[in-house]
Length: 254
Image (spheres, rainbow, N blue to C red):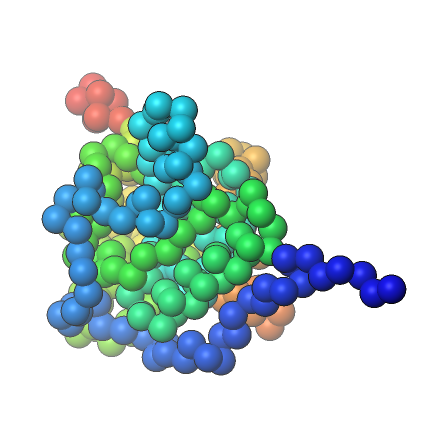
């Protein structure tokens, strides 16, 4: 008598080759997709139905997203963060439509394969350079990740880079005091650029190396992403910068 097939046997993960997309997208172009008018109208209940249902049943406010994986690609880090921090809601943010579709399908398949897990992972298609305040309240995020961002090599395209002085002020607004911002790249020139921008910004300070060594999120920067794993396999080098959002009162004292 054959074994009965379980739910995990019946559900397969989506195949990347069915979600082909351009490797890069110009974030300064106009995109045509829905954007909430305010964080209160963001589709969190749709992304995290189990979390919202549990909160309603308990008579509590729904939990808020605390981790944002900006430019999440195919969702490797988003998934690993959801596994490593099972009590935090993690959202991947991706501008390419096919890629964001893949991540949503991947999360849905994982939830069906392993009931009770991955309820805290989600993905939205959006332009993080333009729309973050539409999704997050002041001081909401505890961690932001910018991993293997597009380098935009030409000087004329540097304004497309995701780490900019004006954008850092916006990130600081939606980050909680003491929250961490993580960057990693395999392009030296971009690594230097991001570090210089963060060093010069008054709302951020570098996190000491000994603290990073004990941070499980920092450990995921290379091995938690498809791009990072590829760089490691090829013996490539990476440049990492991790910074803390300075509390406003500390800034006032200075």
